[in-house]
Length: 213
Ligand SMILES: *Cc1c(COP(=O)(O)O)cnc(C)c1O
Image (tube, rainbow, N blue to C red):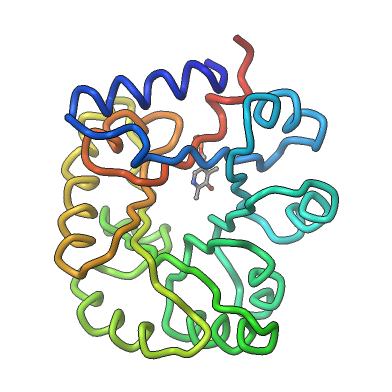
């Protein structure tokens, strides 16, 4: 598909939903791709935020590519000190992780921007809070010095037909509204247009940017 086509599709999805395209940011997911590939497939089109899902793979890229880096993958607490090098961490999935991140952020002298990950599909293999936990967890995370909770994130269940996950995205938006959170990180290569129609402010797209064409 390539990045220009992805942007075009985001814009058309915005138009269908009556949204301003400036309200959606494309996070280019660069896992599995080298720095030259990232330059060729992403950065030649502009300074897009870049997303990585494994600390070990990401650190060498952060060292050489000046970009707005986002961490989107599962995060072990013993790697939290590295995660605070990222601008935004999308994947806070436990209170203990939030506490550790807050401590590391304070040590680094920064306020770490984070999203809370929700497992809205209730899939046992997926990370994230259950939606009924949010009302209890959110105030506790909001209290932590060193963290700023800006929104919610979800990875929708895998499906061939993205219409099937529309209710999941709609639910994330409703929850973000209900809790006064601005950012909704949802939508990947297979389902980002539906996510945009349902209110995504950050779409995390990888494969579609790097496949030929
Ligand atoms: C890899 C990944 C993406 C991007 O998925 P694609 O299908 O390659 O677009 C988005 N979010 C998370 C959390 C990922 O790990």
